[in-house]
Image (cartoon, rainbow, N blue to C red):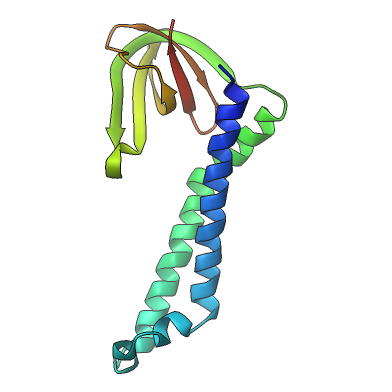
Length: 150
């Protein structure tokens, strides 16, 4: 399996989404156009408070995404440049479980040397059940992984 391709494809998608979020945040913070587009918004007495609230929420979300998602991915990207992703073997403690809207975020818990480690799944082979021996190739900072039967 081509791990470098799969990890880089994931990082590219996340980076593109991050750029879109940052550009929308900058647009909402600089421009009044989104608030003038609807005629109902012009008649609201607390329009300035709404503008400030929307801008503060968007900046807060962008900062949170930067710290908790983009920083670990940036560190992992530096490791991928040197082909230094991690690989381990373990026993499945909890099967691949989907989460979020449309099960976009999948996780698995693997028992590695007595420690239960939670991985974010990028790709997992089908029919992985509790108790199966698996090989987990993962990025150490973000814990995104490719899970294969061992």
